[in-house]
Length: 226
Image (tube, rainbow, N blue to C red; front, side):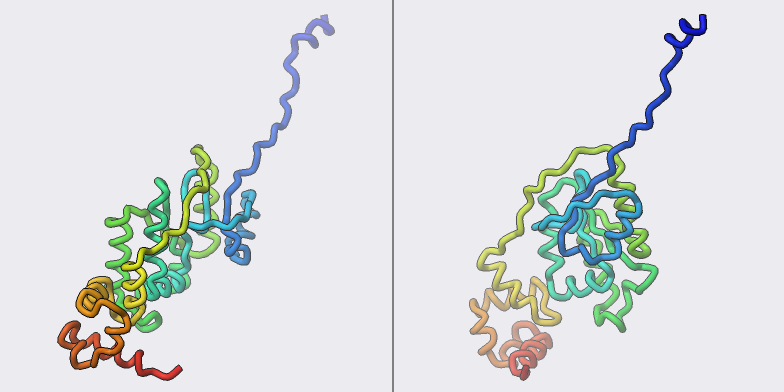
């Protein structure tokens, strides 16, 4: 009877190890503290050159910015281009890291008006439909990414490409590089003077008739020594 019982007895359960969640990370993030934290959390990392975004987690593209990087890339217009490139992905996130370590709206440190930053954040949310996550620090960022990596969703094909500006956009991008010159002012100058050379060669007095006090900024930079 004992032998018969043993035949029908349930075999012991085998410990089947689940595969580690895997994410794709841009190679420029290699030295970030968030990487070692993700590895601690049991995430497998694959480094690649990503044309768009810093992290690909399942079907979500994530652009990660520390507060300093966010403000600086907002000033030099780089973030505007990155936001447009993220539009190639159906699911995308902007992750702003370090709200426990630095004040985002500090006019004194960044030199950018707090309301300008708030307005830019609203544009990202409303105009470009990109959700924003604010994290306390790199550990908090890693936890968000870890949770996302364990959600059931499809893998994402890496087909995104860098956005190439057309000739008009290139000219506008250069003019917007002057402090305080936004898209509307840049377009106004280019429509009137046609070329960057014409804008530079125009007197401050004449520029003031077109764009007001902002002309002083252009004149100062054009005449500035290296």
